[in-house]
Image 1 (cartoon, rainbow over the protein chains, first blue to last red):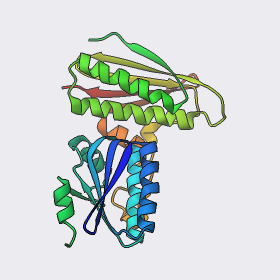
Image 2 (cartoon, each protein chain N blue to C red):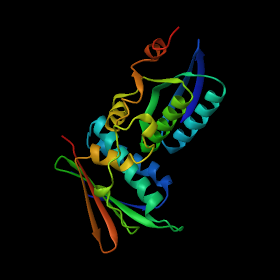
Image 3 (cartoon, each protein chain N blue to C red):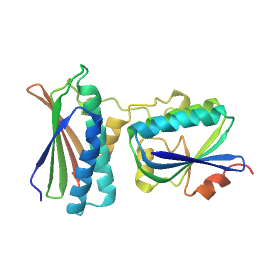
Image 4 (cartoon, each protein chain N blue to C red):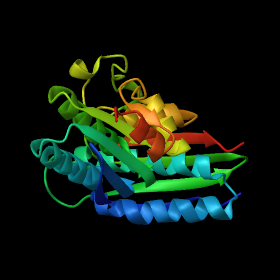
Length: 112
Length: 138
């Protein structure tokens, strides 16, 4: 997996590409720790180019959600593909995460 | 219909890439829809990762087998290992309704396999774990 970061106003966008597996989850949790330590609280994870999520990836996502909750931040997942969204639903995670179909809609869910 | 193919694997998660590549090719050859191919790859990823990381707590190289058959509109994967006894059909179901603060971060892998496959069967035979995963293709 690769990570690219962008800033859009007050929202920090992390663009993920590849597979969110055990290595990807490790990268994501480490990056999120840095981002939160840097004071960011409004985060979008852009899943447009994530082809695959397994249970290790889900573990990483739950850890990230816990990190955000304990630091008072808000996280939105953007453009999660249908097979991956199905895996999130089976795992009971669509009630924990806010999902939006596009990055633009994810950005729109934060106050301007 | 394809003849059964048996892959001999090492207890190393590095094996996943070749297995997933094999399964993806098999799905293309058998015109298996992308959504089902995705679920087959995920189920095998979870099961093989589980064997590679938990079946042999003592260090050292061990081999286990994955036999795959596509027949009569069904995908069948049979995984045999000689590791510690593990029955995935009795693995505890995670609490999916727990609020975030109480939600456990792990324990989803086997649960996902049981949800996305049509059936998961387990036998302990002559010191081996024999897990059979089935998925209807129609």
